[in-house]
Length: 184
Ligand code: AMP
Image (cartoon, rainbow, N blue to C red; front, side):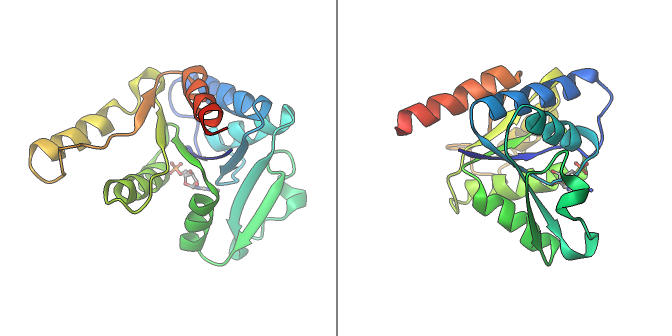
């Protein structure tokens, strides 16, 4: 199972974010899931990559030519590096490889990535599951905002498609494993 994870390039203001990122990467690694992510070494992204590699997992980073990132530079957190030409191509490549999308806490980059896959799903352009890892209720304002757009008549409300929300990495990965089992 290929799991694309969007996550902040910073650690955020609560240690629980980093702990849940670590736990997610560990559980994905020991479950044999491939972690596809931005490939950065900082913040929650770096935590994900380093933890997965440290536990024998496979991580895929997608980068652009102009960043001049090499496998040698990122070997502590990326086991497979893909180099593309543009940021748009980078985002598309990550999404194409994914069976499941997960968003951790993050900033504008994470929000932009999440909104793109959520709007595509809402429009019926794809049916890849979208999971939110929600430590400390991080994503509650996002869910409230989408719900309010439906209440204001700007988003289809029947059905209103919302991502699956999990407070812990353990619950989220259990749900991924149930999907894998039901497909076998
Ligand atoms: P942000 O949430 O603004 O910290 O941005 C993080 C998200 O944008 C990640 O999910 C990445 O896919 C992407 N991203 C932003 N900065 C970087 C970076 N320096 N290296 C790799 N990916 C990044």
